[in-house]
View 1 (tube, rainbow, N blue to C red):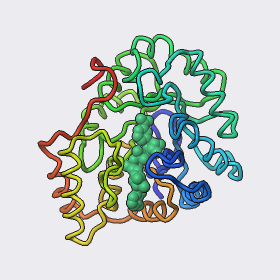
View 2 (cartoon, protein in one colour; view 1 turned 135 degrees about the vertical axis):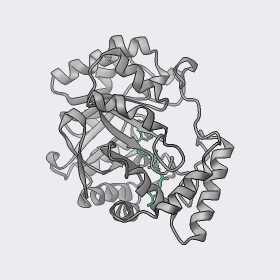
View 3 (cartoon, protein in one colour; view 1 turned 30 degrees about the vertical axis):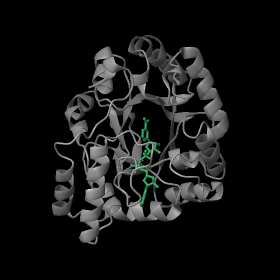
View 4 (spheres, rainbow, N blue to C red; view 1 turned 60 degrees about the horizontal axis):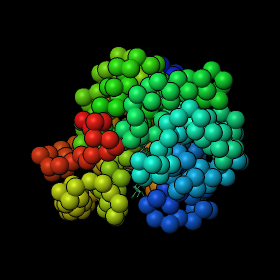
Length: 312
Ligand code: NAD
């Protein structure tokens, strides 16, 4: 496993990291024992960054992850969780300082630890950015001073959320972006230079575009257009014809960018983690990757997320 420095945090994070949302049964109903085995397998394979949120499975993912981490020494993993998002509708977001403080206390309890390494504000495009910059991020800074979190950052889908945060002048350590650097879309590249200039660490999530680039295909709740799902199905067929598992190609492609410190993949299947780690260490079929990426060009490969004024 390769390790990269996460911006100015100095944290050495594994190139491939573990996203714990499937532990909350967001893709399919999972067995808790299998979920716990997946976490242990990830750590055994050299993965040291684990990401979760109270939102995943309405706190279930944090609870299952907490059970898995009970037997693992705290210095064996770097843990990120989030605050501000608790459901799918606008009413389920709360970026007030009071709720963030309470949310972190609840997360620490579920995760069985006294601090998290990174606390992210979860999907800020659903919030009022004025409140995010005047209240929520200052609250995170205060939690950092108290030692309850080591580093802070924001997550979101519109790339504008990262440029706006940089413009706000508030010092953040890392961002978590998803579905913006994978075979179907590489638009993250437009914000990388500004993030690098401020030494903000980049964590990229969803190398399979939340299931589009897997043989099982996109889940019913996937927010992408019919054209995106259709291109995904064509990509699966193209890879099958060449005898390549599309997820192998997707993992290799998303993890190849030198400015992305770590890429989060989610699964609750230990065998998938083993495969993913082996794949990212393997050689990518560059020609096939280009052919697949071509299928997503000129189609509607992004989607709206959050308030209209927060779209790209
Ligand atoms: P992903 O691209 O990692 O896709 C997960 C899907 O891929 C699951 O259905 C899983 O079963 C499947 N999969 C994984 N490995 C496989 C393999 N080897 N073979 C076949 N299928 C495989 O997307 P994701 O889970 O949404 O993202 C990863 C993590 O990133 C999340 O768990 C979460 O921690 C984080 N994330 C954060 C945000 C945010 O903060 N807003 C958004 C998206 C993701």
